[in-house]
Image 1 (tube, helix red, strand yellow):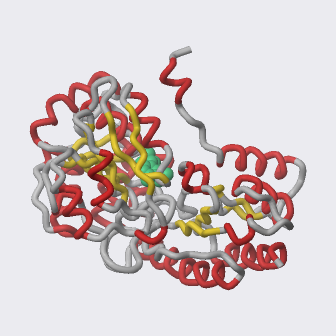
Image 2 (image 1 turned 90 degrees about the vertical axis):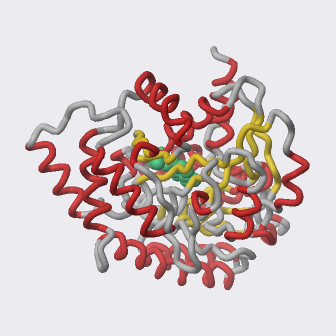
Length: 386
Ligand SMILES: Cc1ncc(COP(=O)(O)O)c(C=O)c1O
């Protein structure tokens, strides 16, 4: 077995998911899933029609390796509209989900033994993409009082001559917090390539998300259609990269992926042209998430969880459960607590440890489920915790 694969860590939440499936197979029918990071909505209606039409027209062949030109242009328009940045369509590459874009960014930027900076806690797959490029993930501890964002002064001590990139993710998974433009600017000024994961852009309820492109061109922006447009299974993402990297990225794409799925590209173009219109599907979904968030955050606080940093985006709340873990009536670690909650309340959540060692003590609640489900989950948690 390849050593790099062996080093990769698996998702602990998969244990929870497997347990959920087993319980359902045994006839437990009232499980409320708040562990998944996947929208509970259908894809936008315009995207559905676009796929049906594309299928009728047999648009089922390879596309240009970078993706369809009208879609790449629409992505440039989106970034101009939302962030006031000018990018040309030859800097945009469509990928099958944003995940392969992260992989290709790492393959492009790193030689074996190079280092890439990421936060702990943070999205746990980043470290595995770094390992896939035979590079070394360097974890920088972050915590609730900075909204789980880097303290740039501390960041300096993690940078070495081998550092080849730094990951940023705002709004961030697991905490839904936003990075301030001041911090983004400071990170940009470090002069390192910034891999900016903007997958939760468009799902912001307070404040404004900024693109790294507003601060530097030395950035590899990752984005996609999974979250904002509820298209997880259509597997469509993209990267906006510096002009000078496009030739190599294209070579990687041509060899490793060929191109992004053609039908999904049609769905994505319809999403950008139609679903984003005022009162359209994207706005409807965003409103629903915000309504859930406005209920969930105070409700979790009222039953004893601490939420120090404002979950202003994405669809997650990262709740500090240490008060319960220090109480002998409950398990003493977040994984045990998540399993115990599932067992006794039939509410599934993700243990914070899934996002790095510094996630211990936390539970991640996803509000990508109906308000009714969330209200019922809180009722059950309240009973269990008291
Ligand atoms: C922060 C973050 N980045 C990237 C992804 C991958 O998304 P996809 O490959 O569906 O575009 C996820 C999925 O949960 C995520 O949370």
